[in-house]
Image 1 (cartoon, rainbow, N blue to C red):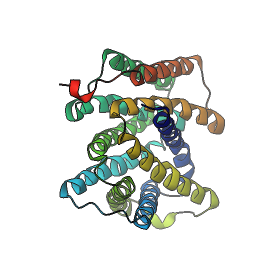
Image 2 (cartoon, rainbow, N blue to C red):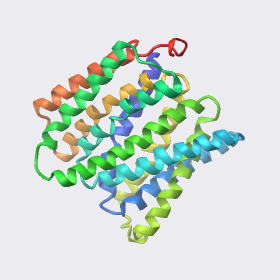
Image 3 (tube, rainbow, N blue to C red):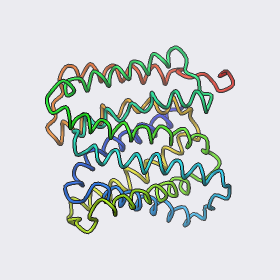
Length: 297
C-alpha cells in the first residue's frame, strides 16, 4: 500500500474512534435507536445529494442492489444497533477496543470469499493484535459490574459481525459502482430497519434538542459516517481488505486516548502493553502480511 492509502486509512480509523464518545454524548438526549436512525439517514442523504450533484448514476445491476442491501443490513442496521446500545453499558474507550475484533473475523471470510490469504507474518500480526485487545480489556473484565459489561460486549460483538460481513461485500463491489452512491444507498437502506425498531420500541418524540445533541448528531453523520464510508470504500478499491483492515487495531489507541482526555479514563501498564502489541500486529500485517490473490488457493 502507498503512503497516501495508509494515511487515508489512518484518517478513517481516527474518525471511527471518535464515534463512541460522540454516541455517549448523544444518547443523553435521545432514545438510542432514534439517534442511530437519524445518524444513518442524514449520512446517507448527504452522500446521495453529493452523488446526484456530480451526476453519478444509480446502480443498474440487481446484484449490486442486493450487495448494497447486505452492506446496509450489516454495517448500518446491525452495526449501529450494536454500537448505540453498547454505549449504555461499556465505556467509550473499552467499547472502541472490543469492536475491533472484526479484522480477525474478516480475515477468515476474506480468505474464503475474496481469496486473500494471510502469510505467516500476517497471521502473527492478527494474533498479536488480538492479544493486544485482550490485554487492554482484561482489567475491566476482572472488575465488578460484569453483568452489564457482558451485555455491552454482546452488543459490540453484534456490531462487529455486521461490519465484518459488510466489509467483505464492499470489497466485492468496489470498483463496480460509484463510492458516493453506493455508501449513500446502503446507509439509507440500513436506516429503514432501525427506524422500524425505533418506532416500535421507543418514543422518537422524546428527543431533547440541544446544541450538544445537534453537534454530536451532525459530526457523527457527516464525518463519522458519510465521510468515513466514502473514504473506506475508496480504500478498498485499491487495497486488499486484510491489509487495510489490520489498521483497525489502531482504533483502540485513538479510542483510549480520547477516553483519557474527555472521560477521565486512566491508562495502566496493561493498556500500554496492549497498545504496543496492537501496533506490532499492524506492522506485521501491513508489511507483506497477505499473499497476492493469484497465489491464494
